[in-house]
Length: 330
Image 1 (cartoon, rainbow, N blue to C red):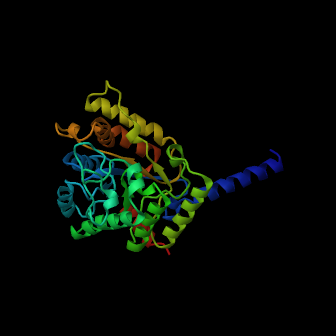
Image 2 (cartoon, rainbow, N blue to C red):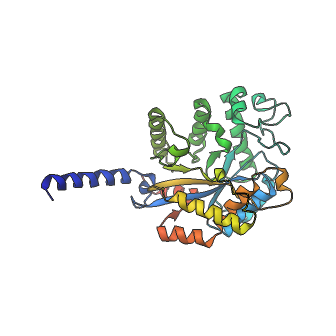
Image 3 (spheres, rainbow, N blue to C red):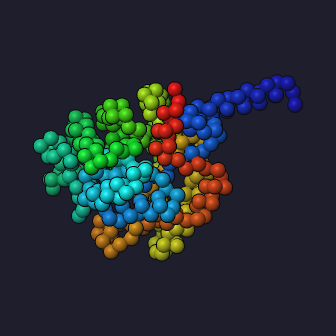
């Protein structure tokens, strides 16, 4: 091998190590090559089935994090669970839409304070576009703070914040309110600010937006908060085939999908979004997404999935663990 080629390969290696060393996982004390994930369950509090899907995914499976929809009817049941399980990694799924036809909820701040968040049925709009058209950034701010207030009234300090249906990412003004709440209350937020390799596959952004994310991530980090590198948001789109009607078939289908998608994981902290619900006679009257959600639950409880994570050395973490690691860093 020529000297020039040796120098080139050395510089290439140094460049690669420098990139790896810039992940937020490595900043929190993991190795530069470590792939760290947060296996996270959305929509807790939405229904009885969602509550117990999350509980099973975390107690019987490998999921370790969840977030709660504070305006929904089944929030009290899950908060009673949290009183008995105070170390649960539970954040708030800040909710600004009510997407189901026959099962709906309204804003906690009340119609008078946030009229732009309320449709003709007196509840939140069913889609993000309608919220964007009607609701001011000030109303968004009022409502998400009301949801945090309710959590604290009920005795729970959330481990993190994220956004139901991505509504808080619908406009720069909404996003600014989300980020400001994080700074004001010193609560970590779900905002991928690192290499964003997987996120770019589902939600590609331009160079200017990437620069904004990187700069915001550094500001959040400098304020003493942990942040994440990437976002895995594929599972809701993995619709099981019609023939997958049993739990075992759903488990096989979803586990295979997770394993296939994890082959593209890069070093750093990746937030993996899923929706886990148990099955019931009532749940199909809420949503037709039951098989998707049951499949997620079955995958999290699949021993083969855990074996895969162990074999590949993929580390599962929580917002609590990341916050504790961040406290130890100057």
